[in-house]
Each structure stands twice: as structure tokens, then as C-alpha cells.
Amino acid sequence: MKTVNIKEKLEIKAVELRLNELQDFRELIGYKRGLEFYTKLYVILSRLPFYEQYGVFDQCDRSSMSILANLSEGVQSLYPKTTINFYSIALATANETQCWLDIMLLKGYLTSEQHLELDGLLQEIKKLVICYIKKLVEDIES
Image: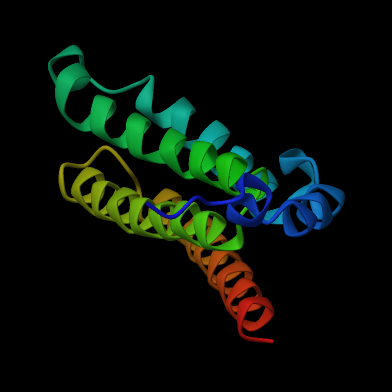
């Protein structure tokens, strides 16, 4: 049986370098925009009828919080590929949230102006996340 040196396995030097690069997730522009989005969305969600509590409210609330959670987890990951995974989930969840915005518009819970504003914020968040992913991929390949 081959023994593996734990230091080689964990690539300690790479981890130490990555630790020095980590930033507070609250400094991430995408996270700040996500908080802005969630704050505006929650005002609307809180006005939904009670019977939507376990439907539109719950799903939209969870997906929008998931964007924030995955961005914050990704920033603090020690490994770039793990960070990319978290950012990828944030991107997919932003798409899901856009779907819920469309449904709320169809059901009359959002005005066209509200939909446009919230959708625009999500588009901005998605563009930022894509930039974060591209940068990480470039770093990995270089």
C-alpha cells in the first residue's frame, strides 16, 4: 500500500497562499447587490397572500437567500475549484429566482416596473458571478 504524505495531499503552500487572498464576503460587489435585491424582494414577498406562503413566497425567499449564501461560502473556500462550484450554484439559483419573478408577474404580485427593477438587479448579479468564475478559471489555467 502506498503511503501519502499529508502535506503533499493538502498542498499546504497553495492553501497558505489562498488564505492570504481570501476577502470578507461582505466586500464582494455581487454579495452587496444580492443584499440590495433581497431587501427589495422581501418587501414584496411580505405582502403576498397567506395561501402563497408555502408556494411562491417560500420558493422565492429560499432561492434568493441561496444566492447570498453561495456567494459567501464561495469567497471563503480555500480551493478555487470549490469556489467555482459555489459560484455556479449561485448563478443557477439566480436563474431560478428570475423564474419566480416571472411567475409573480404573471400572478399579478409584481408590477412591470418592480419586475424590471428586480430582474435587472439579478442580471447584474449574474454578470458579476460569471466574471468571478472566469477570473478563477484563468487563475487555474495559468
